[in-house]
Length: 170
Ligand SMILES: [Zn+2]
Image (cartoon, rainbow, N blue to C red; front, top):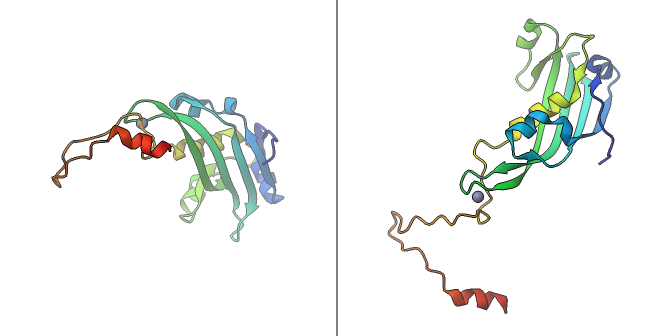
């Protein structure tokens, strides 16, 4: 992907009328809200925004974002890097009735026709939605061994044989 840093503000109505695409990145320093609710943003957000007119003449923004942040594992309370990736479909609206009339696949973005769009904010909104409710290490990578002893099935957990480790080394 390109290293083009996306502008702070654009006119989305003009871009939609011209059917434009913006592709580039949002530097991690521009993602303050994401940085605040995580252990830190670790990458620039790779972003593609397509501004277009849909079949009904609505001005729409289709976005795809990819980023990463350190999050705390809720099981062992250690930080690990979590990849964030999401897509969104926004329709530009300038009054409430327009928003109510939108089909289900479109979310409304209330903005007057001469009002600039804060590009980083819609990218950051999507990345925030990608955060897990309860972050946890992938299976087997957690720093806490969770053994609950003999469970309901009556099985006794297998005790590790210290020599098994040596066998694997060969
Ligand atoms: Zn963990």
